[in-house]
Image (tube, rainbow, N blue to C red; front, top):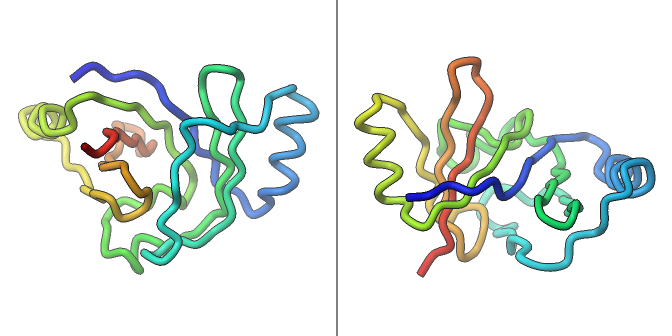
Length: 135
């Protein structure tokens, strides 16, 4: 059930401008490997740019305040962005959250083909994603 930081998602109304900024000003590269395959027909069809520093991805996603309503999920990871961790045992992590009394929204494979995702809030209301590559 180890967690490893995978990506940071920033929600924006200006994907192209943000992508240019992160590549031009910060010197990040366009990410080309280990990219999520977005399920554009399951509720979110926004634009996303992927940049990285050689280790951690930043997903620059078009803000969508209604994706939670369209998909029937409580937590909307595209309202204001989120931080994401990858685990090797999502089932164990969900059991851990339940034991700790932390509610989560199980997105399953709704948004990304081949990933099982859950989203939950930290004590200040920041959104956290934990996902596992589906077997």
